[in-house]
Image: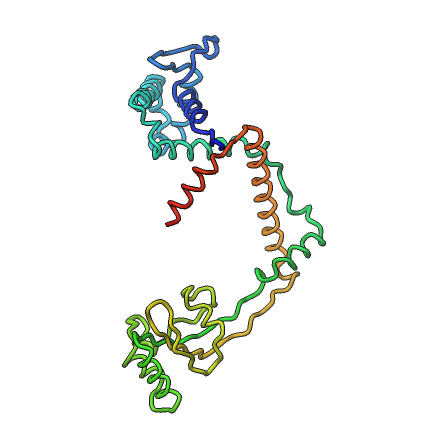
Length: 291
């Protein structure tokens, strides 16, 4: 059985960062000590730089006297120390907030030397063309479908409506207004949209994808309801050319390469820091949260 080892190290890092240090180097001389840590001259200089960028002091740098900087830094530290004393950093929700803040901060600091810079202008024509061919669907304007729909609670009623529409006794829009239980579309002649297939309700997509223009289809049982569909118009998909989309292809390939680089880094770090996963507990977590 494997264990997932992360939290103790993370908590230690948090405590070290938030508690300051006791380096007595003259350049980093201690200004104030307190239970659990200290603030040095360099700490106060760092607070000063951050305060200058804050919304409150951005245009009021003259108010940032050494006394104000010291009071602000110490007051902040006292709140942090109080929180640590009350073990707030051990609360899972707070630990998640700290984890997110620290990871974003460290990524911003380290990203230039842990992930090599990738220059999209170095991509060859062959690389770009191969990427385009592999992801051809991303560079296709999908068909746009205009669909009408009638929803009922009875298959018998749905079949009766279809019979009347097909024999010319009822117009689809009139049938929708008279019989459909879908309040959003019944007063629009049953129209549920003029859009790409993927933007229709997911449970409807298999049915809508098989519709033929001008033909009424149904009844289709979806969930506990019965549906009648009518495809009134459909545009043909349009393939965008490689040359027209080359600039976008460069950006997409760049994004893919960076994503792969980050995944490789995560795998390397997990190996470097000997991450061990308790698979039994992980499986139980996934099963419980998937219900």
